[in-house]
Image (cartoon, rainbow, N blue to C red):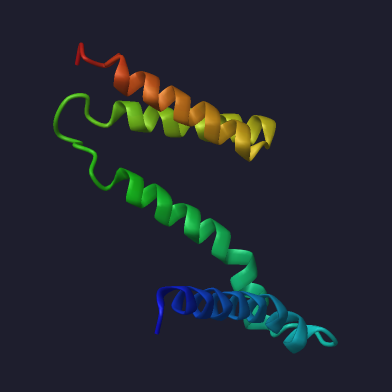
Length: 112
């Protein structure tokens, strides 16, 4: 198979798969209520994904060596407080990221 034909076949297969994943829920649940299990997953999946991301981000922190994870914990506290105060996910994410990068790049906890 030539390279051009292979690329076209791949793009077509990916486009059909994407279209099918978008249409399938409407075909299955368009006229009836989704099952209770699906509603439970819909409700609980976003917090579970966020918890996995937090765990993944903290997995390599050196808790027993300076700065003892203080930049990470400080940034998490600021992000949580800002999010509970403003209820704006983008603001919380950007401010938390900028704060953490400043703490790490400028080594603000080097005195520990």
